[in-house]
Image (tube, rainbow, N blue to C red; front, side, top):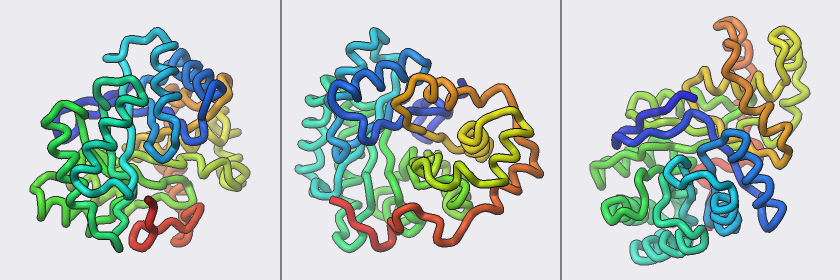
Length: 276
């Protein structure tokens, strides 16, 4: 597995495991299965209400903590500086962890206008040793430029919605040009109609891979980090099995052409969407 070197010098894997809606005992079992199937980067969030589940799974997996990359995210209701530090500490207590490898602002929530203050809290939390690397989710260029202007520090990661119907080329280009690694949430379109797309189905037959594998390989070749979720051990292994083939440049462009200007799954435009 390839490792990405972040702009702060830390390294993270180029493939991860999402945990949204993996909660309770069944969630623990699914995450333990993923870790045992070779996933070393686990993505959670305060608002997923499963940081405890993730921590329990890490404990039960038998894998050394320092061999795992664990990500969580701060919700908008805690963007005031003191609240942010406290919420991060609470997340660590729930997960029974001493630190997160990655900690992200979940949404910019531009109407509230507090993401710079929250970002400063993450900068300090990194200095305190509560988190190794800091980043954001769903930030647009104007939000990132404001962070740099106000604090002088750009995120290491920008986790954004990315799938064949919404390939985020301009956002990816901005991240790349500014030394920010792009990570993909909902990389398979939340199991939407994209999995039945005729072009992707045909490419699956051509490369002898599933449609999900074609999509995840496409994202890998875009130099982004997909974090698919699956409770199925078989699907977990299948999702990871994308490193033994390469999609041609012509076929990459065909997939890129599937993108739509209104391709977001739930119309969550960071310019206006608010999540607390």
